[in-house]
Length: 236
Length: 115
Image 1 (tube, helix red, strand yellow):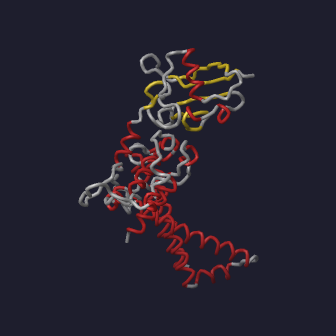
Image 2 (cartoon, helix red, strand yellow):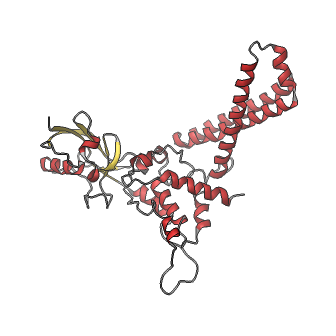
Image 3 (tube, rainbow over the protein chains, first blue to last red):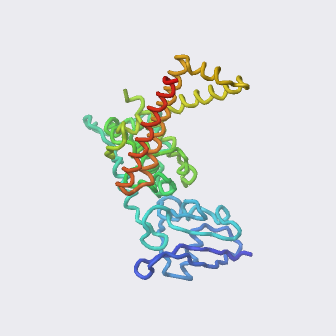
């Protein structure tokens, strides 16, 4: 009963012409371990298995993957949450090019993140100490700054699948709003102008896959709605 | 910022607004039509023709036609840019959609004022 059937997407571009699914049996001894722990036990069986991991506690965002059809972080997802009928299917994050096994090329994801200029811009004279915020102003960044860029949301988004080069994606847009909402940032107008075209922001159809998968419980759809409100109130 | 030339408004914001406003107009028109048909169970040609001979109904209908034209264009333009990755095929699809919308719109005007 405690033997778990795990099916894992394998692809090594140097030896495989096409990707394939490899079956593994894993004795969890009845314990409800995390998916990452299971992967590590499998790596004992087959050391050629490639995946990314680092902090193993949902902080670094390295081990985003598709577990039984749903994106999430393997390190903070217990088997009991995803395993159905004693079976677990692990695939790389959908929509991004696979480098090897569960490792994807996040280049296009980072390029979109870069496009929203994720840093504070302020053209006023620098104060001697620091730019202060009231507690209320600081509160506006809650639910935005916590993003760890694991890409679970953007790779769960069909709009991002179809146009990853044009649509910024939920992760990038959440960060776009993080800087639009920041009282210390003065580049609001330029930021909004860059998002006004039919793709960058407006390719969002509001299906909320991003909200459903975010391992940090964040809400990119709400942030996108807020940016749209800002665009509307700035428009004539 | 993504450059667009086939999108008429060249702006995601205006597309978004057009889509919302036209949807509201179409919803009102649809509800009106359903209610009208419910309240006229034994509808005959004279009553139906009488409804459309009134100026307000022609204006209301034309507004709905223009809304459906705009709504269809924004929607299908979006679909084509999602799924048709080959530029030639996408442009051909958009041209066919545009032509169809134009024909239906002119035809609609002729039906409304022609009778």
